[in-house]
Image (cartoon, rainbow, N blue to C red; front, top):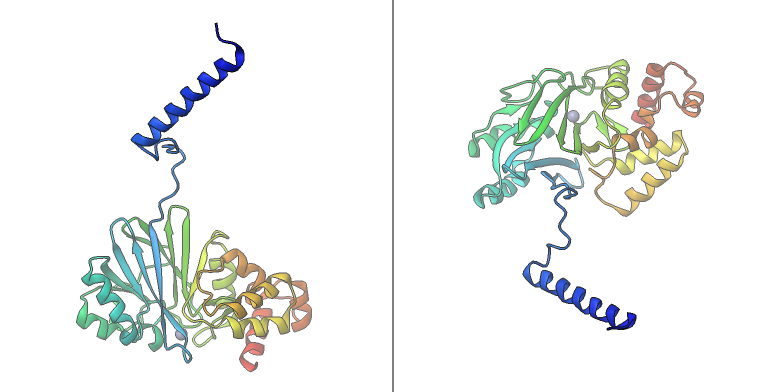
Length: 295
Ligand SMILES: [Zn+2]
């Protein structure tokens, strides 16, 4: 008869050899848990900077990783976008299905004609975009593989401005063109303060807070410089720190962040109201934009 210590030793050797046997058969088996499988990311976003140092625009190539279906958003400078598309279509990494435009301005939709000479693609965008084939109605949806896209009409910068919300499982991204920038908003070329207030503080503000923002330009440094003149808060200080340390800020901030650091999304902030001398949100928006235009 074994004493207690010997029994424990034998039990230990038995457990260790079973563990080793399982590991030898399949090293991942011990750790596999079919219920708590991590989310397999299905939406891939590639930023393509264009006119760096002048316009600082972004085109975005969005791919549904499962089906490889892809769209190119605002490919305004074919010289910088086509090599990327060619490389990825030649290698079979992507299947291009559409061009998407956020609005008709040349530095967003001006590359359509040339892209079409290489790829026969339908164009989804605002009604005034060059060669547009479909203008989706407000809140209508379509799919790119398993990605659900919702068109959000946000007229003001141009009357045909549309933001596009992309959703894949828990991943959410909104492509905002020149309506919403990180820490700022577009100029009111074809609209007024009431329209921008609606676009930012009703339409975009109603998206889930964890929706990542992908704007049409890298304007963050200038926007934060202006924001600091208007308001001092922790979020603005953090944005400034990030913008100083990082050349690119797209996709790094969410709608929830914008509500904190974007003064155009804080038109009811008592400190901003006091500074601009207005209480009414549309008046605050109008005054802020005029101040920014002069800055
Ligand atoms: Zn524009």
